[in-house]
Length: 264
Image (tube, rainbow, N blue to C red; front, side, top):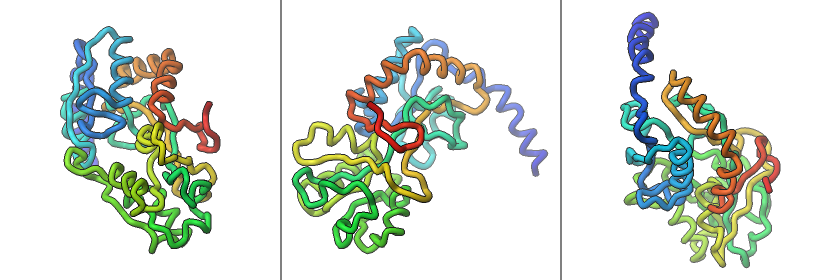
């Protein structure tokens, strides 16, 4: 079986270089992953795609598909697009570029609420509160270990965001009082509460034990496309200041590579 797998993979590997377009910067993206990507072009990943396309002297083209089960298989691996703008480092479905930012999970509370000073999931103030979290995400494990399992209200991880909006629902719950707090991925929550007069985001920088709550974000390309990966790595290195400016303006919480301190 191993031999058959090798023989089956060899032709695909040889054809990888032929899949990349040289006439457009083709991006695989979720059409409704606000505030990261959106079909109306308003997401910060859309802005990053525009920056890279400009540097390459190419127009941007998108292959839209909900980011869940089958996303990579039906977009990047199908040859419909050539890069995923935001992808966690280490996932085996893609080949990762160098990371261009690191972010962290955090807790969203009301600015004037009793949990406004909470910075740890082990804070006793969270006991007995209604807490929103996306089921299956790393902070859910920390919350259960901290004795908060009975207080957790879970939302689905893989949804079609064109028809469901877990993050928006949780933020509205905190705003309206049906939730006391929501524990969310920084690049999703940070931009949405950046200018909100009622809500705030506090990064979880002090949690101990596994799983980690910070992740280095790369761009994803097809396995074997080494030249394309090197070109993107060069663009990341030469345009890091512009990348950082886009992320900061969007409100993405940026931390150091070890998830221990906020970046200026």
